[in-house]
Amino acid sequence: MVSRDDEVFDSLIESLISEYLDFNPLLGTYLGLHEYDPLMPNLSRDRFEYAIKRLEWYLDKFKSIDRERLTGSRKIDYEPIIRGIGEFLILTRDWPTWRMYPIGFDIVGRALFSILIRDHLPMEHRLFSLYSRVKGIEKAIMDSLNNVDEPYTLWLDYTAMSGKGLPHLLNVIKRFGEKFENKELIDACERAVEVITKGLERLKDLRTRAKPGFKPIGMELFKKLLRARFIEEDFDALRVHGYREAEKYRALMEREVAELPPLENVKIVETPEFMRPIIPFAAYIQPEVLSWSFRDRNLH
Image (cartoon, rainbow, N blue to C red; front, side):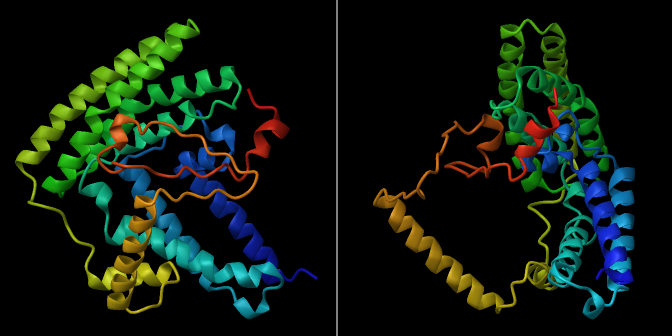
């Protein structure tokens, strides 16, 4: 039997997921909820501050629920939700890197690449989604530049390397538009390259007044972040374990050991230029856990 606490919990979960996907539509694409594919995240300061207030509100609401009165899987889900909201607040409110470097350069690259590599989607949908996201580049880049009021040189240098690879990605998308004679997409890509160029010039200006290096998260916040991710071990022990695991897998790679589970397929895609500063070797893109939703909803 569903209790009043269960109903409140379910309502909060549904509302939280909906709001978070609106804030981060890229997550929708990664999950396979392809109605979010045409959307570019709103990176304005107002949007971040609103999201922080909303998450604080949700955290208070969830904490007001008595976990012991929840039934079924809700009792299991309760703690991960509390900690997940806490992690978001640490990374956006307590250690706001979006105010230390313009995150838009990285986000627009991932927004475009995530559509480009999903060749199982209908072509009409991919073309429209790419066009819509390319059109959103100017606002995303400029908003993220305007957010920066505590710049740091190391992160700005990383951003510059990442940003310089974006025109290459846009040229790939432009050729995609040319192949299908989509003039709107072609024109949007050309405009976006101009925006990226101007944004990189503003980045140079930011660097002239930036602090050296980067701003560490600090031990106390880092411990809170570990706890939010259910990591309770001692920090020093974790570091030793991490180095040990790194050595183990480095040795495995030198022996060219790579095993795949039965019936699994892996598609190897060249790392796009804008990602190479942070992924110099390789990375794994997980399958869409909700990819069935596209077929069932017959989206175009």
